[in-house]
Length: 159
Image 1 (tube, helix red, strand yellow):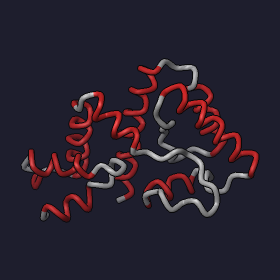
Image 2: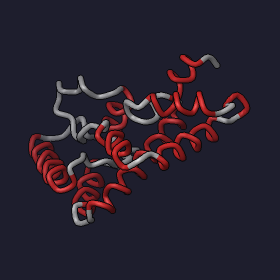
Image 3: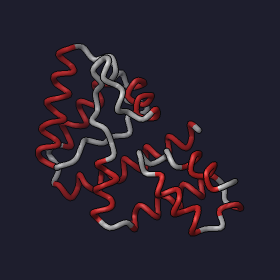
Image 4: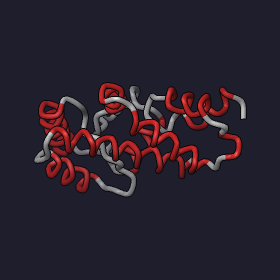
């Protein structure tokens, strides 16, 4: 696979972070690796990044909850994932609730609430954010990275 095709294929697994796929392409003889092995290398790469780089990765993720007509800033993956969880079709009160929870979370942790929403519904998302608001910054930082890995794995399965 040519460099550009590799980046196009694997570059979207980690939100707005095709540099991760590029690093794997340049560092490994990937032509004998399965897609799951490539994903594993990407995960290892992320895990070895410094805290500042991980924070940049976390900050690439959008806030959950889509107001009708305001989906333009989402990647195709994020839009699809939020749609499946029903976060694109919130009532006004649900949207207000989620915006408030997102704001409380961001104020406390200084990054957006990240969860692999695949297989979840909006009620489960609300429950998770409430529970995770009780965590420490360090626990949530690590949880965010783990959720990002889950998202990448789900995206790989959907390719």
